[in-house]
Amino acid sequence: IALPMLCASFAKGEGEAVLSKEVIATIVHRLLGGDMLASYDEALRIELLRLATLLIEHVPEQLVDHRKELIKFSWNHLKSEDTQSKQCAYVNVCRFIQVYDTPPKIILQVYVALLRTFQPDARALVKRALDILTPALPSRLPAGDHKYPTWIKWTKKIVVEEGHSLPQLIHIWQLVVRHPALFYSSSAQFVPQMVNSLNRIGLSPNCSTDNRRLAIDLAQLIISWEMQRIEAASLPTTRPASTGPA
Image (cartoon, rainbow, N blue to C red; front, side):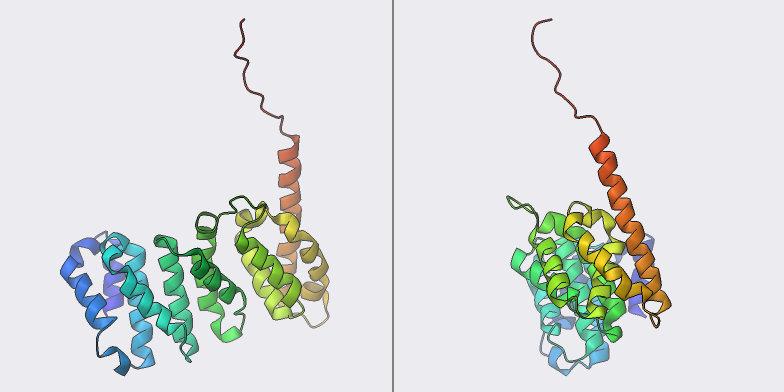
């Protein structure tokens, strides 16, 4: 009951009025921590992870003083034996990374773990977690002095070293197709592998409709990226205006 009511309040812009500083503190210290935490069953843990994710998304400013408790709560659930609880924790951590400054090592660890999680029973929550985290990566893990940022290097590494697993390869290509603009500047790192994987994904006699659709999406993306590259190359180079005497 509580989560739908909170969602409705946030939709109406009433979230901050409903959640006072005292209420937030009670939620963090009594529900997400405290002596009773060990006695919670998995169903309750999942609902609390969803509650924490909802709060981070909609009232992040009110949670600034509780960041340590929030990340501790979700991080502990990344070790859960229950698949749904574990993936809800990943969604929570990704929302945390999106909103708050987080050590780069942790961000990369979470991203790589999600790239390697392609099992069917975790698909929906992993997709949601990646769709929250990936748009934040260019600002959270910038390239700096390197040609490519570390998250691009790890994406390429998994494609090359673990792409023999078709479900793994499909999982990564689906991510790239959903976020083409984020991968465009590094497209040269992926296009050769995309081309080589089209037959495996979409042209085998027993491939699924979803796989055929992905193969078409990949082909369209390769063409789109190439058209963008040609268009960018054809633009005239802007020269600075002369500041000399007339």
